[in-house]
Image (tube, rainbow, N blue to C red; front, side):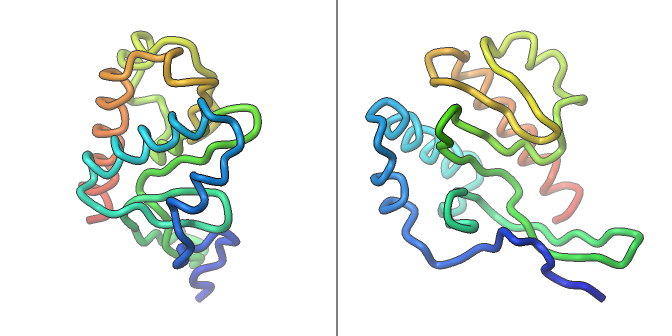
Length: 140
């Protein structure tokens, strides 16, 4: 069995130190706001995943191939171009929320936002909560 093959692993790095190192003032402030929002929703402390991702809570997955590992249930990263939020179930089940969210782009499980002002914060909070609840129900 190939356990924990992910390159991105939870570690003991300081989340606040990482967020304080974000050079752009607005992105740094937005990052601390997202951290607080996710801590409030999950009831879990923020943890560093790799060198540039802040994640909350953990789930264990196992694919039919036998590959298995652990990953965060929800998280974010203040990237150079965007604030990237990791919505692990993807976005298909959240069409109605996505229509009300505001200005964003998506990848498979990534929500890309330039700044928090571009989105409706209450809709963002609901999206993160529904995603987290889904992951918790599915994986425990």
